[in-house]
Image (cartoon, rainbow, N blue to C red; front, side):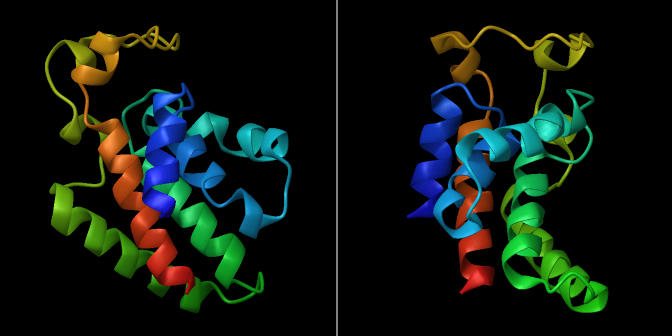
Length: 141
């Protein structure tokens, strides 16, 4: 269920991290505005640098917020490592640049591309948001 929400949020124009985090807004207990602000900088592999996938960052945020007491690093790190292993088993990577290809990677600007039908056709991000949210949902239950 959360995967469908995350994918829908991405297709509505949110970045990958925002989409995953917003899929859990009811559980997180923060406003949509606060969650968007908290997660905006992680899109595009950390501010469009194509590093760790923003959907993975969102997954880690959700698991941390909903499973941690704030002092249990070992426990949370272990959960997130397992979640990341599942994500990587499906995608082959946790790195944005490794999951994208071609012309997308040539654009090094901090300015995101316009969200057009072509934008969505040339990248797997909506499905990556779906996957990350599904994995997060599994780990918070």
